[in-house]
Length: 407
Length: 231
Image 1 (cartoon, rainbow over the protein chains, first blue to last red):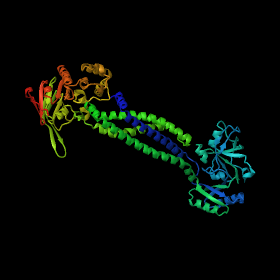
Image 2: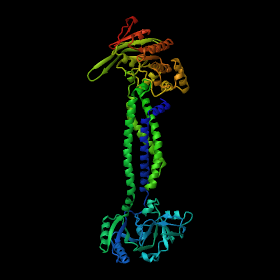
Image 3: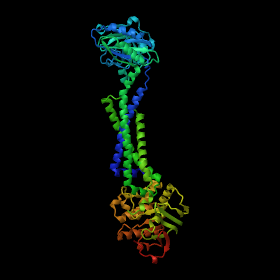
Image 4: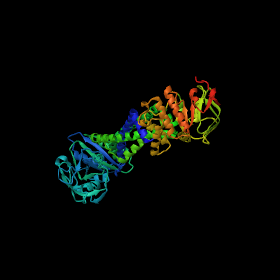
């Protein structure tokens, strides 16, 4: 049978053809988006962090006693933390913790022009020891001088004058020239800071990562306290330090009256949490995809079986007129492939639309990946071909002698 | 052209063995018109199926144009059916969803005949059965007799070695039956071999040679011996 005959028969059996096409389109829509989202999630998972995830510890505490001398408390804490066995360095973190944004978003600007939205940046406002704790490797420029560190109550509003920025951020802000010696404007009031060092890329900021600015970060030698009740620390322990160190830190900080220890965790834990939300969405989509694939597969088997049972006589006639078993199978596979291709095209358009919806309304990451769309199309076609193979084999076995049976 | 030696066909179920054909010997020469008669259940349909390569058999030898068909694969048998045999069935067996042109074209496509040649053959054969102007009609738009003529056109377009007709007028009224029969005779006169299975002795009278099947056994009989065996 030629393609034109198959097309004519498809058009004659409109409802079955339409159902098969529709099922395939729905499968492509769902499986397509799952693939895009899962692929992006996986891709994000695989971006190297370049940080010592199992050595850096985020410590979150809150001082609820308003009369507490926070400055003195912080100095005491740092001294005691540094004295713990296995601790290499510790620093007060006035702003972000590693892969855990505690104080909203931060932007870095290369101009005072307020129309310029700036770049997402993970802003690490640290006391002495912060650079060591983060494990920063400076590729250009110098370390902070001890005299450049500012530490005080937020109300005093003292600013540092220098900043270290990551290589990725340097290239983004100053694509044409070296960032060293340039001025970067930070905070909502756009305070100026001079870039004194550029360090190798590290994945440090949660919000920055969330916006795919994996390696955008900056380190300031200024740490203010008292803006709110938070008192957070970054601690770096020796490699292969046991998890019990988290408990030791918690116990140590707990001894001070007037504050609570909220959480002590390795950066690895923060990183995992960062991905969990996205992974969950990907897993839910995978579950739905599994169901869609099952329903489509079984649906095609059922619909094609039904359509074959209706056409049993017709297939017998074709067999008698010289269609071999393989030709009958081939014809049914071609017929199904035509429906599958129409379904796949419709499905891809629907997938595009659904993807748009996810990205704009649910802030899901998972833009269309063309080669992946092609792969999904191929897989769905294979699925439909496999599904049709079962009833088609049955159809091929219809005896040509069928035609001489008197009905 | 067609030679059957000692063909047997047995249908087996768990409980019984039915000898549908036993030891059939038959030779058909080019240009013959043979009518095969026999009562219901005598093995007519089995004989038809085996002759038309629609069914296989257990024992014996069947030579078609000198080629032994007993050990052939499905693919090879399908090819032979397509190229050498023109089928005309009692129930016409046209594909309802395709128009007359397409119905005749399908088996020609199986054979790999090019479009131009197909067109020529389809038009010629439709012309021959007097339906030249109805190529775009669908089977349901035609009378029974016309549908059977389309089936004949389909069989002829393939230029087969022989036509195998199974009760070709069984579903037609007398008038149409006569027209179809005259058409078949005319085709035979022009040289096409015709094997017709029927239980209608009146039709059988028109054949050159008569064969009777009784309890799976085939034998030549004289026209004068044709009795009404129909049940």
